Image (tube, rainbow, N blue to C red; front, side, top):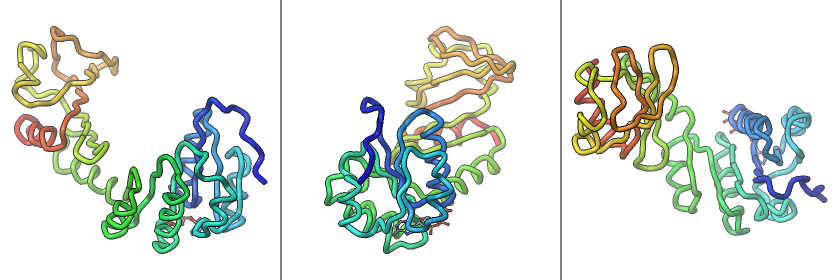
Length: 228
Ligand code: ATP
């Protein structure tokens, strides 16, 4: 029987599969004060998290009865971080869904795996290797792009050098939303001070900007304005 988590106001996360991905997520969540149930079929993997997670369980998470016993539907978020054993990942995802898990995030090892998880109705699917390869490739193609990230299907944020043609001008003067259909979320000055831009904030040489919008608009803006 699971002990009840202390702080009922806190969001509660269940992480299934404690490879590098699941372990890293467990660490970040607990460091930020969230309560984490960490599950792995392998005893040593679960033991490695016993000092970090709120609770660890050694169990086969592709077994519906096990997931029911863990009261998987009580967690605010379930993260299925099983990649290699695609069958276990899919069966676990299906069971979590059928048991009424509220919000499920799943790691996929490739596009086909991701497609199946999508069909099951998984809320958020990540392919860590592909995502990080895409981001690395984008920054290699264009050194003025330091980061680009797809948030949800169709939306992106990126950190880029401010275009030369913007220096000395403002958001309102440049009519950025009308011209590019993007938002400038943050301006990072050369001394690393970050500014939430006002319409009249002036862009300086050496600024970095964080932009957000529909992925196509963000990419189009980069192609058009951020010279390689
Ligand atoms: P990473 O890249 O995150 O290290 P990986 O892809 O190399 O992960 P996976 O095979 O995806 O490794 O496994 C991640 C973890 O999931 C392992 O610790 C494994 O023991 C665990 N796991 C696999 N199947 C199950 C299952 N049915 N129930 C519980 N845990 C499982």
